Length: 276
Image (cartoon, rainbow, N blue to C red; front, side, top):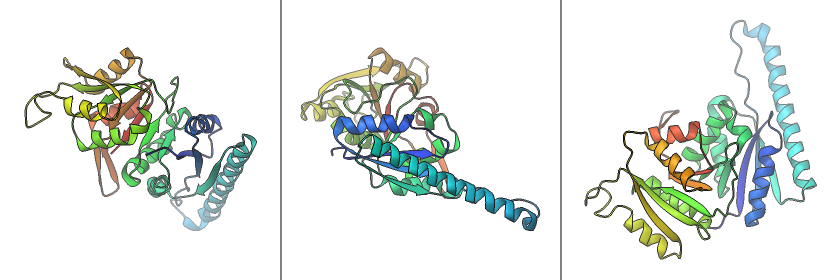
């Protein structure tokens, strides 16, 4: 599936740095840039509701005005740079931010989070949760100091034969055509019940049939966290992208991520494409 629509989510306090990154990625694959400007609604006041109601109403109106201004600034950015794109706004209560983002992300091929959003706390986590749990689409993280590209030359695929890993690999396929791909397994178990008698060979054959250059790297953890082993290997390979499945589930409105996913999300060492 070709990437023809890239979504970028911006807050009312973000500038154009992440937008420029998303625009550059769109330019690489001739994609449409869709932008969602989000302001989180202030919660109802505690205490004397009558006395605080006017203050609360003014705070909410101010936030609504700011997200409208942000959307106008994004529209001006698109026009100034002659970019194909669209802008929409959302003003949800904090409990519904992830759902609002996830709904919008369903109409994009990938959502990109750049350094500005990655430095935030609430909005970052809500975007990640919304895309991964509510959209069915992949998420590309582009951390500070990295060079995100839709056409990487070297890619590390974190592989454990799981559904999530398979989904992430499928979502990344259009980024692998020109890449040297390292299918990477940490502490693989070689038997019929887990990853086969030759772990990684099945997925390597699958990629080779698509004309992709593949190496299978089986690494011992030696007692280190899996996320640390994967990150170090990506650095050693000078990889421009890591592809991995996002592990976790939703219980009521609590989002729970697996240990490796949580570690990678906390401090992505390079651009990461996640899917679940």
